[in-house]
Length: 507
Image (cartoon, rainbow, N blue to C red; front, side):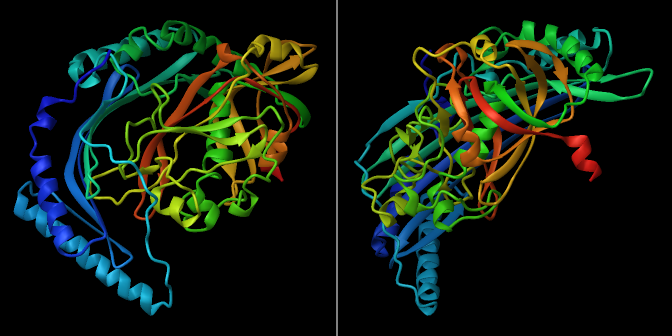
């Protein structure tokens, strides 16, 4: 269903504000200027044992002006929705650029800011793909559904507690620049999650397990029938958790792994998504996720993984959390190759980094999480492509004599060059002779990025593909948060090192 942008947002005087700000920036000699007005509404509900435990509903609204003046960036933000105030904010941005230019010159640098060219996109409107806006649903319906789901878990044998939460976001954005681009956008996303806690009455041992339904760029329909089978997942969760409590500790060693998309998406995020952000690979950025082993001199050369590995950066995927019509520099959304046949062939770019490194065009990865924050290069939906006629998950399991089947993300650790890592999962099933043989506990898979992806011997078909992701990818200083999706099929990896985490902790 194609929705229109909220009338309450369209009623804001953003075009007049943009005209005033951009005219002032031009008059002050800016080589480039852009204006961005945003309204971001975020709401959350939390339940503990089917009872309300907290809620919030906040709106962040304002505008920002960014300029290039004298080869330097300038940025300023405001909340006063008058043309005089917008012009003043533009003047502040130019003043900041002038000051920055002096500092850069004093430091002996001659690296001026230039932006890669982008076609003009005039008067464009884009709305994300959803059926029912969650903000149009009464709060009582939201808490009522979460309570009902929590009650199902609490009614199961062995479940001592159940936590439930729902996060919802509606993001409205208007962008205009001195080249003539102007875009109006609306994005909706949500993240429902339930966690069951079980306690063994004899030993006192406890554990938890949560739903593996990913956050999505969808509407309320995601909780009521479209996109995920909630009934089946909630029915299976208690017995899976009970089995995990009784499961034996894993024996450390080398295993073949069949990794479910509900786990593999996070490995993609940490070992590919961050590593192919070109600002990190160049050393311009290190906040939160460090730099990258996949340095720019290795483009077209680095064997990232096996020959069946194909990874795309994508700002167009339906229901993707990083999907947009246009980024925060007026660049149209695109899809492109990052890894092709196992070789590094691309990066994620914004307009400045694209120009700096010789690319003809940005691939649309600039984003700011607030009107008071400057756009920075952010992650696209980075996804491992399925094999067109590839096997099912069951067929992949059938190819394993001795291994593990991993489902759901849990914890992870990776170094600041995105190279050496270890990941755990919500649950792990032993595979013996091509069949599942019950759960094991206390496991983590450990590898370097290229060794792990080099060990991938098969990828599942489109029927195994799931778009996972997270709301909370961090970057920059001051810190910003972005939502991002990672699609992938089930995949088979050979001879991966499995740690017993209780043994490792005791060393």
